[in-house]
Image (cartoon, rainbow, N blue to C red):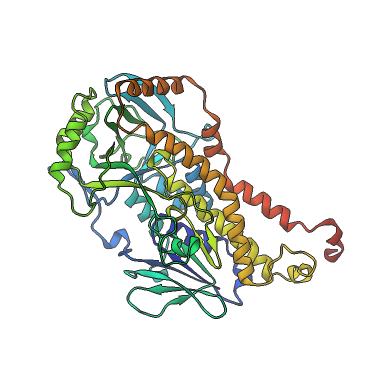
Amino acid sequence: MRIVIVGGGISGLACWLFLRKNLPPPILSSVGLDITIIESHAATRRKQRSGAAVDEAAGQVANTVGAALGIAPNGLSVLRDLDESLFAQVANSGYPVSHFELKSAHGWSLARIGATNHEDPELHIVLISRQRLWDCLRDHVPDDAILDRRVVSGVSYTKDRMPVVEFADGSPGLEADLIIGADGAKSVVKKFVTGDGKADAHPAIFDGLIGVGGFIPSAYLSEKEPRGRVTVTFGSHGFFGYGASRVAPQSNHFAECTAPMGDEATWWSTYESKDLPDTRDFDKEVIGQKLKERHAGWKDPVIRKIVDGAVTDSVYPTWITPDLPTWYTRGLVLVGDAAHAMQPSSGQGASQGLEDAQVLSMFLAHYVERHFSQSASMLRPICHQIPATVNDAVEQASRRYFELRKPRVKLIVDRAKQMGDTKRKKGLLEEWFTYFILWIIGKLPVDAYTKQVYNKLPVDEVRKVIDEETTPPRRYEALFS
């Protein structure tokens, strides 16, 4: 059985690891299992690169690629299910966040929002650089599993209707039983899932929000910075956030408690713009000057210090995936941003990609095992749920994955849009109304949405489906007695 994963980002690496963990080795030993990741960029391990370090003279963190992100408690639970050592590595490579301090541009404290799952033991959100999370996952994937610097141009099908990944350089394609599109919001695979591949029937949408930010020495933060705090400030011209992104050395917190901050912090500013910037060729001085203009007069001294001293080294337009009619078709399936790129306001981008990988791998393992098992061959003539071929197993797994994941993702996407709108330009009345709403939110108990996202985990729903299908109907029990 061959599986090809297009895209070696967070979702793609997680898919490889979960498939290797969950697909049944005893059954597949006779047919073999090959899982290959195709990545268009270099996918080198961190030990083969120069490590990230704080450049005190420049006031920046050198060699840290990409922005920071938060791994929510539900995402951390997925990592713990995947591998305890990987979970510990990721958790202890970031900074545990116990709460968000919501403030106004005028310096008023509006609300304190918890960032844990309120279970025993608690799991805190972990703020971590995207690069560092990727490095942790990459450390667990062998080099020979990745074909890097290979650009995928499309998908074709054999006469037997097997999907084939085609390459832009004209090299021979890769035939597979399943192709997983983990290739981001501008996914090539998505064109063939939701259309004929000639054009993207549902292209990614620039939603008019742009983020800038980077990494700085934690000395930029207050000397009395409380443990576990991330500060987010709202104003009439956007949004500004900052917090520690790494703990002090040997602070093994396992996301279950707060910890002293290390030498690295992160900051980000989001603003509304109709113009789409060139993320590869932009004038840092112009971006920096506009940053100062947007936040001129904001009262938080930490924001003023960051704006005056930090260099804007990254620009991130917000791309979202429109509501897709399906995430799968004929041996193709989408995960992560390819299926549901969402606004960063969700705080769930990485966590939802991890959930995708777990759910898809569990359903695929379940249906592949049912196809190959001896009892399945006895029941197949009388039970339509048992796949007759590997292709049928892939189809059933993809369908179940989509049906289970779509409602949860939609809930998160809808909430993220509401939060994203608070970062747009506002008139005076809108600005003050936003402050009032945030103040009210801070007075309320933990809402149903947070509980559902942090505590109602998809893995439990998957296990319920699998248990129901694994237990034979009572009228067939004689076959197993």
